[in-house]
Amino acid sequence: MLRIDGYTRLCGLIGNPVEHTVSPVIHNTLAQMEGRNLVYVPFHVEEGQIKKAVEGAYALNILGMNVTVPYKREVINCLDEIDGIAGKIGAVNTLVRTSQGYKGYNTDATGLYRAMCSEGIKIEGEEILVLGAGGAARAAAFLCVLKGALKVYILNRTKERAQMVAEEVNGQCKTECVEGMGIDGYKNLPEDKKYLAIQATSVGLFPHTQEAVISDKGFYRRVHTGFDLIYRPSCTKFMKLVREAGGRSYHGLKMLLYQGIEAYELWNGISVSQKDALLVYAKMKEAMGIEE
Ligand code: NAP
Image 1 (cartoon, rainbow, N blue to C red):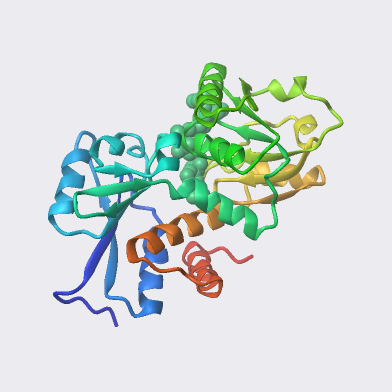
Image 2 (cartoon, helix red, strand yellow):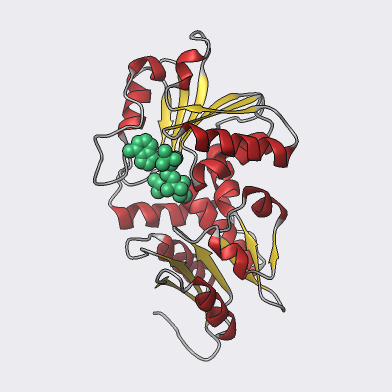
C-alpha cells in the first residue's frame, strides 16, 4: 500500500501538457520496488510560470524534477548549476536538488545511449542520419559525436535549422563531422552505403500513425537500423518502412525508460540493476497496452 507520511520525498515532472505521461510508472514502480518513501507526481505548468514553478519546488523541498516540452531550454535560466553535457546540448530534462538550488542534467542523451546499447546498436565509427533538428535531434546529434560517430548528417524540413544545429554541435565538440541538410539531402549521399537512422521528428506520433517524415523507399534501402524516438505507437510508419526494406527498427520506449532510470539514480544516489530496469519496462508496456 502507498505510504505517505512526514518523511515522504517528492519528485515530479514539469511541462505542458503532462497529462499523458508514463513517467510516474517508472519512478513510483522503482520507489515501490526499493521500499523507498518517495512519490512522483506530474505538474502542469502554464506558459510564463516555469521560474516560479522551479523556485516553488525548491522552497517545498522537492528532491528532483523532470522537465518536458516546452521547457527544456527555458529551464536553464532557473538553475544554480548545469552539468557539462547538458550545457553543451543546451537542454535540460532533469533537475537535481543541491544545497544552493537545482543542478540541471540531460538524461535524454544518456538514456538514448543506454537504450541503443541494450539493443546492440553501435555508434562508434558509424555514419548516422538524424531526422529532425528539434530538441531531441540535438541531443541525439551530440550523443553521436560524443560516442565517436564517423559522420552525422542532420536532415530536417527546415534546412537552416539543420545547418544551425550542425554548426553548434561541431563548434561545441570541436569537430567537423556534422552536416546539416534538407529532409531529402540523403539523395546526394552515396547509394551503396548503409546508415543508422535516428528518427527524431514528431511526425508519426499518435494519432498520425500513418505518417512518416520520409516516404521514399529509396531512403529506407540505405538504412540498416532505424531508431524512432517516438514510442506511441509502438510500431511507427518509419519503423515499418525500415523493416520492409530489410533493416531492423526500434521504438523509443527504452529511451524513455533509461532517461527516467538515470534521473532516479541521480536523485537518490543509487544505481538501478538491469533486472529492475526490465521489471519497470514491463510495467510501462503494461500501462501503455504494448504486448511485444
Ligand atoms: P521539437 O523540438 O518540436 O522538434 C520537432 C521536429 O520535427 C523538428 O525538426 C520539425 O521540423 C520536425 N517536424 C515537425 N512536423 C513536421 C512535419 N510535418 N514534416 C517534417 N518535419 C516535421 O520536438 P522534440 O522535443 O525534438 O521531439 C521530437 C520527437 O521525439 C517527439 O515525437 C517526441 O515525442 C520524441 N521524444 C522521445 C523521447 C523518448 O524518451 N523516447 C524523448 C524526447 C523526445 P522543423 O524544424 O522544420 O519544424
